[in-house]
Figure 1 (cartoon, helix red, strand yellow):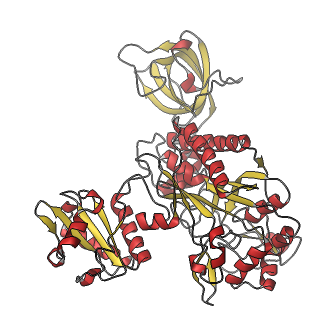
Figure 2 (cartoon, rainbow, N blue to C red; figure 1 turned 120 degrees about the vertical axis):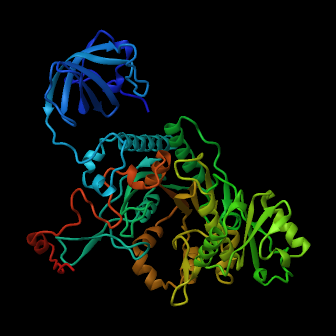
Figure 3 (tube, one colour; figure 1 turned 90 degrees about the horizontal axis):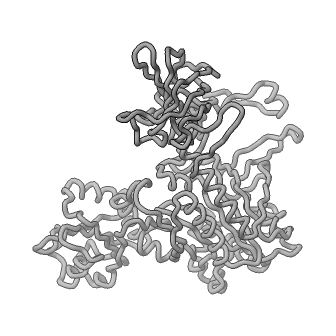
Length: 579
């Protein structure tokens, strides 16, 4: 991200743009006083900060400024004397001398240091977010995010997509997460909702002939907050007509890799893909972190006739933990308890030692079983092998969770490993009424090879849904949509949705499809998560200018707040008492 050599009527250059090529020139900079140091009675050193960095200004005589005063400083660019160079600063070889200082705005002492050298309570940071944004970390993160957005827009424009803004006031929909509701003043008792996504709007754009649509879309969901989720979030949203799943994967891959290159200067290689079933079998999750090994191996065939009761299950999965033989017994007990909390009946462990396997179960294994455990993932002396025996999905899930606990590095560490996950199940389980539930949404196209299974073996039907995963974070998901009425009817029937219910819930979309819906597919990339990973941040709040706390509060503005009696009266609302 390059520095900009901006010139305005108030300043000649940005602080960090000054260098030895400017020596001898009288120039003005504007910014905040980051630090003031006195040198005797007749000399003061000021560190002046703007969005690009710091420059040192030397002032003869006293100057009445304090930290965070906003100033305009005019002085002569001079090389620093030998012994005073500061290689940690971009401007560490020069300084401004013979300076005059114009105070543009006085400032009270800030409630915390703004130099990133001390840990600050997050509640305080969010209460004074306008000050927190001055810190180098926040300046860097939000400007990185802007670079990502710019690269994504350029990539979509270059691929023939048209940017279209869809409404923020939308009709209530019964699908998906809880929505934020907006009362209508002009239609008392009726409501808009803020969109969870532009899903239906963008599909209607395909019916409208726009062919390739995208948007940097603001979306809102009234869900519990966590490290990678806020009420408000932003996504690169796209939809295209007359395309296949592979086409969409190509569109998104180019955009994301362009963004990665814009931020890091290095273009990642082609993004690999694996099916949902492969991801679950090898990593125990549909969002695998590929920065490290510890893949799961299946030992079910080896233990199919075992006499060891702990392994008498339909599936036995095993995982090598490098260096894990050093785990204490209390650590292994903690892992066992964690496995049980995740739903496992237990956890078997085997230390690899020069003498063989060290485990309470080792003496009960036959030669073939012992050899299989010693061979897991090329296990060596000093490693440990963990095993879970259960139903396939349960064994994979538990061992996959332990894999992340034991191996996953912090977000800020390791390379960026992208992977496409494809062929998700079409349906997942049943609801309380015994009806199948859509794994993605009811407009997802089934895999063409599985259409004949919808009525006979619906849980075996694969969908044309796909996710993009980066370092164990789901960046986004999408699917090929159903555009044929006959297939849509079969899917609705499998989900227990009658014609009347379908018309009530999805009537305006289905009605539009009657006028000629092209084959279409789409995707959405979570920009908050993408920017957070690029910035090396564990929490997306660090790449959002004004985030909410985990309780959904905005500490800076005090939101949410009560509305006035007049507003409530205009909206025909009665507010319940607090408590």
